[in-house]
Amino acid sequence: MLFGVLVTRAGLAIAAPSEPCEPSEPSADADAPVQIDAAVVRVEGLDAEALEAELQLRSPERELCDKAREAAAGGRTFAFVDVRVEDGGDVSLAIVVSDGRAYFRTVGQAKAGGAPVRVVGASLDNLLAAIEESRVEPDAVDVPLPEEPEHVFERLPEFDDDERDDLEPEVPPPPAPKWSMFFDVGPALTLAIGPPSPAGLASIGGQAMVDVRHTQGGMITVAVRGGGREVDGFVAGRARISAGGGFARCFGSFDLTAAVLVDVEPLWVRAQGSRTSILRPDGEQRDAVWSLGGHARIGAAWVPRIATLENEGAADRWVRLRLGPTVEVGGTGLATGGVARLQRPSDDGGATPVDLLRAGGLEVSVLLQLGIGLQLAP
Image (cartoon, rainbow, N blue to C red):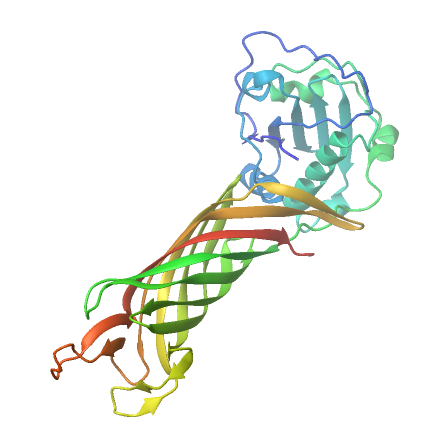
């Protein structure tokens, strides 16, 4: 479901189109689904910014439009929407689609009590979805389009109280999901920078990551990475486990994440197909050593909606693809102190060994993440 929304406050005029709006020609099949690509919304008696946030929460990809001619650009189907609080406390919804169909709903005071903006936002979003899918019959047809949103109620046919009661939904709108989960996998390349030597390519591998996100932006994230590098017949392996938190926000089909995580990373070395013992700085030999540290992560991704999960008695949930780069900057060190380095004796038999590879210290990683995300049931 794709349509744009602009919510304006009471009394703010919206510029009218340069020419009067006339209903567009209806499709050959009146019952065929139609996509409402844009909407111009006027609010009276409610918090306009809060209602805008509720609408964007349910369909964040909706394009914002502030004029009818913008909403109609390219011959798109669009809608005028009027939301107002009546004297008795009921909230009236009126929608006029650009093909001349009109719909009326009333959210009763009892149903709107306690959280009116949330309930009204859910009602409006559900009604637009029902119109797109032809699940509701129009209350009027061939309705002239208003030149400005303020005129919606003035130019639509009047209904008496009994008729409006008949149009009122039988049940309150279901709550919208507040949590979503993304699962990503992808290749990872790690570079060691700065001292101690040697700098350069430290590891090539892959990473799996799970993000659990709240609609307000908070995020919990865990990741597992495996990788390594072969140098002079030695293979240094690494397996990093990370957990942390951060912030995530979706802007239409663009997604931005930032997080800080703590890391635990075992390191080991293989030579000629078998595990080789590692000499720690304290002189003790082990099959593996452990590094501790942390990193900061920032990612950007394209997140188009690819499916919608319908739930009886609950709000529909989206499913999104996620594809984009991620950059990490962090550092680790051995639990006993220092940075792990792979060394071999010098060619001339000297006492100073030759550094082959470093695993730890300051590192930068570049990843390409591919995954899928879905809203969790409320």
